[in-house]
Length: 524
View 1 (cartoon, rainbow, N blue to C red):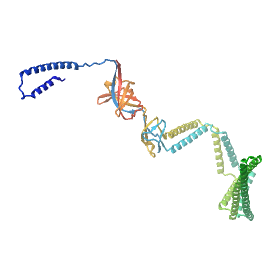
View 2 (view 1 turned 135 degrees about the horizontal axis):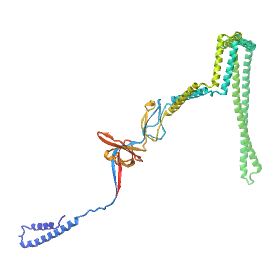
View 3 (view 1 turned 45 degrees about the vertical axis):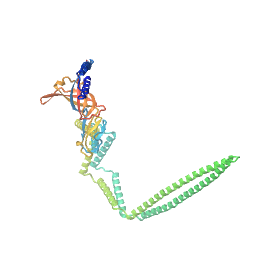
């Protein structure tokens, strides 16, 4: 604090000093000066005392009641609640990779697939094996045969019995012998005919057929061409008639338009003439359309008729050429084989059966008997049990083949984001992995000391902050509290898992977060 009087005194002294040497100082003049200094000192003392008293201040505060929260803190790394590294359970080659890192996927969405051809083939084979096992079981139980199957087996058994008896007794009827002889004669005649070549009558007939085919082609060309020319002329005539009708209608039309402007106006007769002229135009147009249609039809008929006639001519030419060339080596060889077969059949009928023939007939009969009984008689208990076991194995193999085909497509198990793709088209499926994480829910694991863990309980609220996001605060809750400590270097800590939903915050897995667990709250 400053006092104003002393500076005034200084100024006075200064002024007095400034005249030193100009006049002698008088003692009587010092008395007023002393009085002034004494008064100034008193006033300064009063002013200083007043200012000191006024500058002292007193601080005050309002006392109120409130809540007091207690908390313990820890830090950890943000982890998604759901994360899945997906791989193919089947072998094969990757044919498609449908996602990349950062893609958002929905539950069930296809991510990658292997070539399905081998898996589909395996499923088809498993299905065929299953059906075969089902049929075998039905056959063993005597239930698989239809009425038609049984009837067919019965007929084969009857035929085998008759054949065996016939072979055993050598009983050949006269009719069977005559039929075999006729087959030999027919085969011999066919071979002789081929070796002898065509007769003069055959050649003459073939040449006549060729001439008739050529005449038919020439006739078709003339008649079809004439019909087409007539149709074309009809089109020209119809076109001329249409032009005449159009000219007439134009004349009547413009004449009537001029008559309409006269005082007498258009007469009914003139109107009728105009309508008749218009009908003539319409009729002429229809006649032209019909003529054009008929012309197109005659052109088509010409194409078809000539093609048929030319085909007939080619057939006749080929038949004549074949007759002139004679039988081919293949035809002669076939005729010789037919003759040999017919002679062998006749010889079999004319000679008694050998022991080998009888054995063959007996074997055929036994096989027919077994086939019939397998359709009508249930199998033994062991046979049925074996068939049932085979069916069960086939069913398991079929179901596994279906699962393998479904597993050939890797799908997202839940909605989320693709975090990693270690797969490329052409890679071995067993080495491919795709990782999907769920960004809708996270957790952090906090390590708390023995002194803090006693106050922590499941469900307590937790305030979370993030090193990378200074302006973000999210509320979570205690999900689990480890019942057993983790001891490292003789220091015991307990893991507390805190779960939270990120909402719209840009929180990513792997961020460092600090959680303040509210362990108690006291109301004042």
